[in-house]
Length: 267
Figure 1 (cartoon, rainbow, N blue to C red):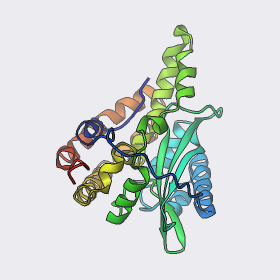
Figure 2 (figure 1 turned 180 degrees about the vertical axis):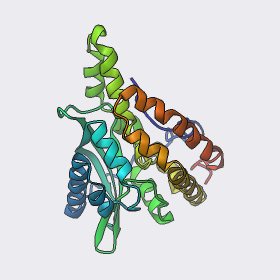
Figure 3 (figure 1 turned 120 degrees about the vertical axis):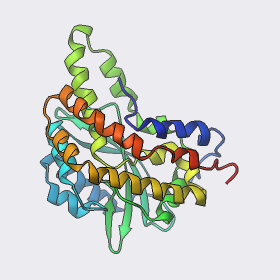
Figure 4 (figure 1 turned 45 degrees about the vertical axis):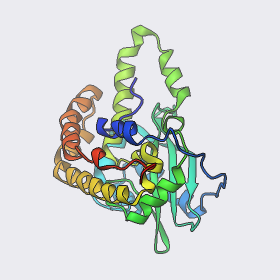
């Protein structure tokens, strides 16, 4: 089973800028604001209903939300419970890791993440790709310093449940679950914050990530027709096949950004 559906180049970043030497995260646990819980509940309902308009109302970018809305319905999945959350001291930036569930309420192997940003009086979730403010990138890096990405990004119980599927039944089940896991390709890449964490506290790296997010948004815009067609593809194997060339173009679009990152030990 796939455990991380992320561009390979981002995983490679860990080799140069990993968090193996990081200090433990601050022990202060700030509660998630009620308004963030509310907007997350709205996100859950919007995906369950495939409601692109409702999703646009809470999305930070607010564009092309029909792509994830369609994909969630086609893949028969929805956001589950919030697994863990972090809130900055000012109370205007939060980071959530949440479960994804299939139509029967079974949790899927990969958890997704969301950046939540207070925009005036309202909170927005980063659902579709967006260029985030540089200070938000640094704040999230601070929040996640010291965490181990795999402790949050992967649901071990769901992995274990799938490992117990009888071999003669595994094929179609794994096809379906892999396609559901690869739903993440239709949303913004918020899991990159888990991978980079402390690396994002370095000012030079924050600017690199601005450039990275710009390249990501450009890819999403340029490939919107292909992403929209993939999102509507019901057969799981055909969905994965439709995504493959799009993901290859993404890797090309963001190639080289990892090489520009500065190790936090020297930043």
